[in-house]
Amino acid sequence: MLIKQLSVFIENRKGRLERVTETLCKHNINILSFSLADTSEYGLLRMIVSDPEFGKKVLKEEGFSAKLTDVIAVKIAQKPGTLHDVLKLLFEAELSVEYMYTLSTAGKNTSIIMKLSDLETALATLDKHGYQVCTASEAYENNDFVDK
Amino acid sequence: MIWNETKECMSRDQIHNLQSARLKKMVNRVYHNVEFYRKKMQELGMEPGDINGLEDLQKLSFTTKNDLRENYPFGLFAVPQSEIVRVHASSGTTGKATVVGYTRRDIEIWQECVTRVLAMAGVGAQDKIQVAYGYGLFTGGLGLHYGAENLGATVIPMSTGSTQKLITMMQDFGVTAIACTPSYLLHIAEMLEEAGQINNINLKVAICGAEPWTENMRKEIETKLHLKAYDIYGLSEIMGPGVAADCECHAGLHVYEDHFIPEIINPDTLEPCKEGEVGELVFTTITKEGLPLIRYRTRDLTSINYEKCECGRTLARISRFKGRSDDMLIIRGVNIFPSQVEAALLELGETSPHYLMIVDRINNLDVLEVQVEVEERFFSDEIKQLEGLTKKIAHALQTALGLSVKVKLVEPRTIERSQGKAKRVIDRRKLI
Ligand SMILES: [Zn+2]
Image (tube, rainbow over all chains, first blue to last red; front, side):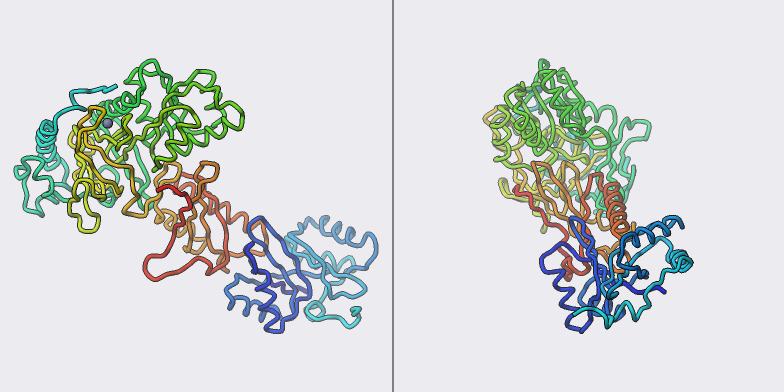
């Protein structure tokens, strides 16, 4: 199962990041996870939000370059070695990781958002080894068991 | 010293007569050899016989860079191909370069002019001169080279490249003169200062040109490097460096009027300006064989002074340049038109054509940054893709402009749009 990530191009200029969060807030869009990749001149804000399509629409209306990308969110247990195991499986399947970060909606366990060179092969590989991935609703909504 | 006293110190009457005779011959030659000029004159109902001297010059139409482009590459050459011994090229307003051609005699006259410039600056056969202008299609390197060789000086053809190597040779060879852009010379001075070597050089003279500079820059160069700095002017269409240069009085640049007739016109009305009034400089070449130009609009803004100079020369002097009447930029001696950037971006097709050029001078070196908007269709969520895009744009611009460019991706709609002429250039170099 693939989930939609909302990506935005942000210049390294005062107030730009805030402008993104302000826009999403104004339209009642929840940010569940994000990672900010930065270079000396610009940043890429990658987010998992409650409504990716709507998020893209409102950001574009604000003049941002925004796009949706397919990513996967792998569920793994919170114990030593699990991340290593997942990466090992993927590398053995000759896949490369474009980027990854954690999803905050997984409660006790954790989920890793990944973009890989071949998402279909990645899903098949993970499935073969008994790993589960988040569905869209799991990823876009807060789980009940999240500690307040 | 005055290299050619007969030509540099003629009376104004003699200059007038020489120019009139040469103009008449030149008009006759282009009428019969260049279709472009013949047509232009016929449109005005003129024949070569209508031009009998300098007073008839204003009857002739202007020639522009656009005319050169429309007749690209060799359409305005006035001699058969076999008589052309060299071509040079400079930036055009769009993709195509402006091509110029020289006969053997043109090259001889060019070297004579540059020799006069060097002699006027006090360079002689005993000097060792580093020519640090680019060698190649650009006229700077070869132009200075031939003039210095003709003078009998020892020429070290550095071209552009490693400043460290230039400094090492400057010290090891005991170099006494240098020809380069003024901003590059300041950069050299800075490197010498940093290395604590500023007093361990033997430079006495610098011939600087290919970009506009100020009296303050000249003073800074002279104080830092303990030398005399002179201004040299030229443009490839007319010849290359050596069309005009200043003497020890630094009271304007003497124009070699035995080869080029200068005029100053109002760029809007195209009417002649009064002596001393600022306007656009126009040149008519009167000895050129390969590519003679009639009333060529240089787009450089200046004024003219016909009074005899204290140095003894009677040649008219043009003042330091006050800017341009078009949007051409001179960056590290390279002529750049914003339209070239636009053409290169459109050709690449991987970015929006909205761009902003920011020119700055950092550590005395000109830098050009081009900001390009990241449109949604070219936007990626991967840094390596965006970096790849940046490199691709930078490469395309470097190829088109002949100058390294820093590309900066910016958010869409951040570059100002305006009706009519958009602001495409921010020049932060404080020069004029
Ligand atoms: Zn003088």
